[in-house]
Amino acid sequence: MTILVVDDELNILRTTSIALKTMGHVPLTAENSRQAERILSEEKVDAMFLDIMLGNENGLDFLDKLQSLDEAPPVIVFTAHSSIESAVESMKRGAYDYIQKPFIPEEIRQMLAKLENDLAKSNKIGELQEQVASNQPLITLESDEPAMQKAFELAFKAAPSEASMLILGPSGTGKTVLAREIHHRSNRAEKPFITVNCPSLSKELLESELFGHTKGSFTGAVKDTWGKIAAADGGTLFLDEVGELPLEIQPKLLRLLQDREYERLGETRTRKANIRLIAATNRDLAKEVEAGHFREDLFYRLKVITIDMPALKERPSDILPLAESYLLHFAQRGSLGTETFSEDAAKALVDYAWPGNLREMRNVIERAVILAHGEKILLDDLPEEIQQNDSGGARPGHMVSLAELEEAHIRRILAKTSSMERAAEVLGIDTATLYRKRKKMGLA
Image (tube, rainbow, N blue to C red; front, side, top):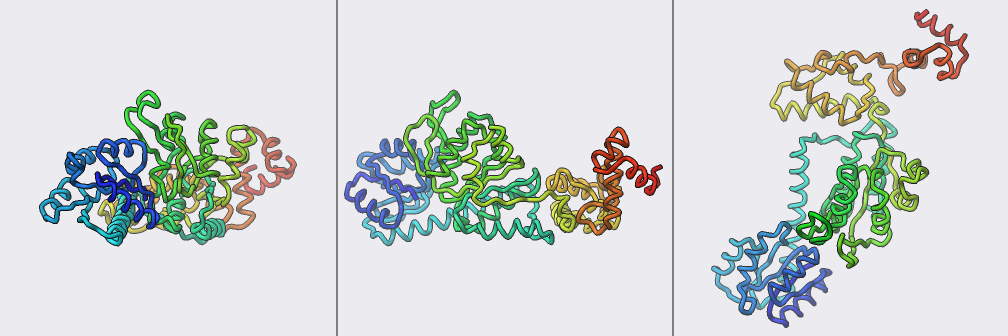
């Protein structure tokens, strides 16, 4: 951690700094509140030691001022007064804890170990609260499909490494869920998992959100901001839809990956970044490179480990278990008695193509739970496009014959083309053969 020590005694500053360095921390020192405020405006401080008596200043008054900051670090108070009153007063004003002078390095070590443990718990609680607030059911990371099994096996094997990872797949396939699980299985699991949604902001705001900025660096920058890279220090930074990252920002991201360095907007000072990067995209980045929309060197730095997430329609055996997990979640959340799907509803879910993948399934099942009467979700409770799906179960991976697959495919092509000649061209057969097959299917 980066720890600021605020004390008017130079001997305390020196000895505490030496102890912190020995423990592997980065110490910063200030002799008064003015120096401390300047350091806080320039550095991301993880914790602070603050003396109650700062010469002519009252450390508790400065503690009050710290509480008004948006990102105030936890403060451990130094006090030479053994009275319980001063310790209690500091805790009332927001101090994390206190240490009495004179102290020994072991007391510092134990206090910081306690703080780190509490911060780790706080991060976990924050992540759980974020998941609860998003109303997202927990998706099981298990599958009977070889493609998904391969994706999970690769992701979990590489999770403990420090390698950058690129997760590819259509929107709504669970890339964020997998990235979070990779973080939880890594050596950084006790540290933050920070997400940046690349398409959600303009170039200027996205750059500021990533790297941070100083006060006055652009119109509207009314205060210093540290950015998501600083927030992810020690943990994982997840860039969602990285394929939409503006070209102007890509060199900075490349430098972050190569040198672990960056600068805040409006600042020339180079800062170190101790992060692990995971990125995801629904775009074909190789084609984006060819088109000049994505840097080739950044592409190769991102894809140290590449994981392909298949579309839901390519996971037919997973569809019903996933739908049942959504059903359980929404039924419990609404205190409803719905428990299962009717046979025809279950078949319709499995046969449907799910163009919106898991995101679409979530909305479909939530709607069905609301509309259902009784313990079962019926076919009528599902959206019309699922009820009227004409696949008849004939889709690659389903338990159907090649003849059924062929017939379903020919029917779709005939429906989408303007002539028999065009349909035959798409299917790669001559028109006479298509006429015979059409007649055999009863379409003549």
